[in-house]
Length: 84
Length: 132
Image (cartoon, rainbow over all chains, first blue to last red):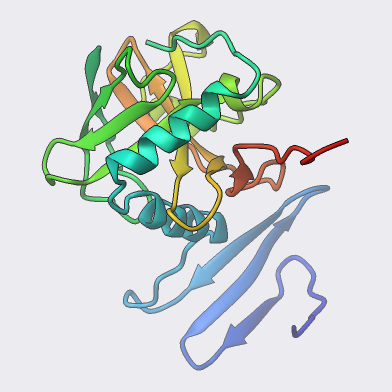
């Protein structure tokens, strides 16, 4: 991984078209400004992870797999659950 | 019991899916089923967060609260985790991105956390020692 030290107000370039500027630096967060062509997808990494996980979770589940999961859940410590 | 939900921004990777049915049946409790109203066969298995981690600390951004029209009254919120239950791998729950429902508005959001406090592959079933 390339590591670069930058201060607020400084920027870096990725390729010819993408510029990332350090706008603000707080004690626990950094505010970034990103200039990129409209066809370049800019995504928070956790959104990508959630999307991949959703794709996996959406795969067809057989009735047997659901029943097996239910059986396993029932063997756990009981929890008071009735959200609806 | 079934309730209809609106996800104004869809779900990550399913951004165009905005209307879902959430179903809970006695036979399959505590599991819940979230089914798309527009795409047949698109569904998710969920469990209440409280059943997975009773100490879970919800982190709902101001934008997400506005999206589901929540004024800060958490009594109307239902928090669920999306499950991945593959045939070949042990089931996991996504605690990184819980589904948060505002029962008062019928709106919901998958609230993706920015911190690293929780895993997107939280093991659902803890392994027990075969013998002691």
